[in-house]
Amino acid sequence: MTTISLPGIRGESLLGFLAGLGTLRVLVKEIPQAKLSWSLLGGGWIAQLHVPPGTLRDADHASEVVFALIDESKTNHAVLQWARFLGKAFDDQSTFFRASADAHLIDDSESPNDFVSVFSSQVATTGETPEHFDHPFRAARKDYYLGNLESVLDNTQLSHIRRTIVQPWDYQDAMANQSLRLDHGDDRRHAYQWHAPTEDPARQKVGCMLGANRLAIEAFPLFPCIPSGVGNTAIGFTCNSKTYTWINWPIWSTPCSIAVTSSLLNMDLVHQPSPTLSSLEKIGIVAVLRSRRLPIEKNKVFQPPVSIAS
Image (tube, rainbow, N blue to C red; front, side):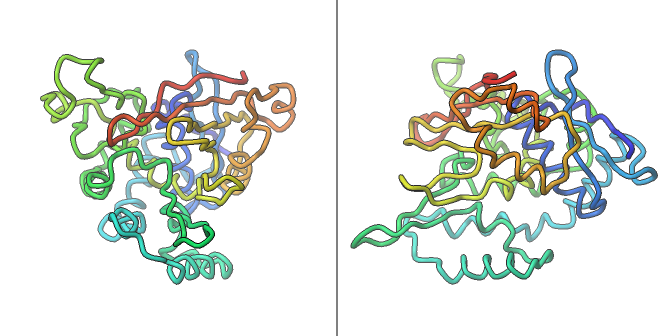
């Protein structure tokens, strides 16, 4: 296998980690043998692709292949079906979810339902209509979120993907209406800046990595909503309440396929309050990071991650 470093994608930030997973998930459609690992460099972890010889030349070539693949789906992307769950009234969508389950059972790789498990799940409540649980990755307020998704899909160009994958991030893309609020730099509360957040003129020019947000969307299906004994949650998340919600993610040094990556994200060892590194190292995990999600008015923000096992 040929190893290709992706200098722009760093696993010590949530958005960087999701961009790495999204890159892998896109590439396996073209290169099924592709794998991902993380390498320690400069005090953090950079993504490394592992592909058969002759498939990719370098990180720049990888960005071209990834962009060509995602550009095909921007006008009718499956993630836009999230719109049906963003309204104030939520009707029972059992037929919709059943179609998704059927598609997975028959391994329909062309099915548009691969994002359905991300949008929402329902749990029965005694004597009431099913409770709606929205995915904790939806950090932007409901009335803005669909517009943000559409802007990210429509506006991302090859240059944005190249700057995300090949170069250290410069945050030179406009933040307004095209940030999914997955980066801790999106925490722009009144007390942290001179301008009111909605009136800050800088939002129209800088503050976002558009390509990273686009790649993060492709990672969402690896974090499906799941019912739990105390309500609902999503893979990777602990959701005790709207205030006490956080996500743990592992960093691994051994090249892993998309199937193994999905298994690592769901591994109980990773989601312990204080994971033991000695146990994790036996399966190739070299660090675990955690970011807390906080509600800020009608939005949510992810705090800077901390290492809980390294």
